[in-house]
Image (cartoon, rainbow, N blue to C red; front, side, top):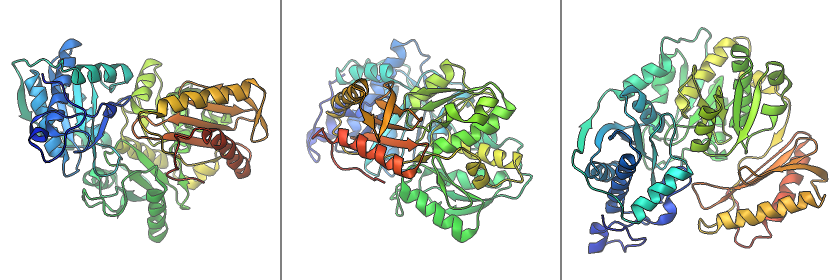
Amino acid sequence: MTKPIPEVTPNTWSFLRDPMIKPTGFREYDARWKYPDEINLPGMTALGLGLGTQMYKRGIEPVIAVGNDYRDYSLAIKNALILGLMQAGIQVKDIGPALSPMAYFAQFHLDVPAVAMVTASHNPNGWTGVKMGFERPLTHGPDEMSELRDIVLNGEGVPRGGGSYEFVDGVKEAYLDDLVGDFRMSRPLKVVCATGNGTASAFAPELFERMGVEVVPSHSRLDYSFPNYNPNPEAMEMLHDMADTLKSSGADLALGFDGDGDRCGVVDDEGEEIFADKVGVIMARDLAKIYPNSTFVADVKSTGLFASDPELKALGAKADYWKTGHSHMKRRVKEINALAGFEKSGHYFLAEPIGRGYDCGMRVAVEICKLMDRNPDQSMSDLRKALPKTWSTPTMSPYAADTEKYDILKRLVDKLVAKADAGEKLAGRAIKEVVTVNGARVILDNGSWGLVRASSNTPNLVVVCESSESEDEMRAIFTDIDAVIRTEPGVGDYDQTI
């Protein structure tokens, strides 16, 4: 195999012929590049050959399910990837256009060991990438990604005979059947279904209708130019739009999905945008009544309520705070046999007997409808108000170059740990501990906290703060954390702040 080169000039002979892959596209738990600036089609074929070689190296049966999201260039990229997989001697089952969780479902439905889903998830147009996995319901983590990166970039892909291609129809219908089963709402429920013109537009409205939910569609026509906003239910732009549609339609709640359908955002009947970690606590309370003494995994960006909520404690629920990232979370849920995992970004990992352990925005939508059905006399705002009150920021991301962000973060963690060790205060309070499992989560003596970590898939740091006392304290935590961040000249502007 030819060694890929990190840069090729577009509109040259070499660009059409030679594999070009920018090394930074290999992230902690998936791969993402700007296309065609950072990867070309021969580069994607080299990735397929490398992925197939990795399967043989690990003794994985050489069969893989492959899908693609709805972006206009995703089909060409998927076909280039498939060429490489077939070159490596892999039998490819092409499931066509799909959501990421539909591709994960296909591993079970078609009984194949491996998956490769061509998607840039919620990244803006111009990005592409691949989410892949060998051990269902898990996807590649840092070890698998670094092994894959070395195989691909060192030109160690091995061509083999036996590769084949088959287009498999009917997976979408089987996926929707699996999600809904025979469940039908017994109470009336009117839901704003927001898909931001992304791939979920082809799934979510039908899903709700099957359950007997009244659908208020919002930007649910497929359009890969994303004319309204980038489908990302963590971005305030999408959440505000969902809230506006909810208020004008009188719906009971709004559910929004990201570009590849593995995340879900929630707005309640009062137009309040409930961050996914709080939705997780609402769901955990409901599920812990059915399955007492369960363990719930939450990522380090999530609310402290999973550990401190009196109702969860009374139901014997245990909290486990873990690394952010869909691969880390899936693995942790499986490892410790948790009932569910919740990530502030809107990834939910519902394990047996509810789901199969992978992140699926559609599964979350179904379970929220079931939750509402089990609480017929309550609105989503009632369930929100029943939680202990905390004040939290949205996820805020200041720029930090991919090549520098981990070094910057290491220095920031050291500075925050030193601050705690020296007995210094943050937002006028004593620092109880600094959790460094993923960046630094600085926990104060009253349970309030501030977090800084590195984004795994974009050139950014990530900052989240939560106060159990007041909005003023939340702002003070952010001010003090940001003051430490600003000691690093390599950190740029935030995408959004409070």
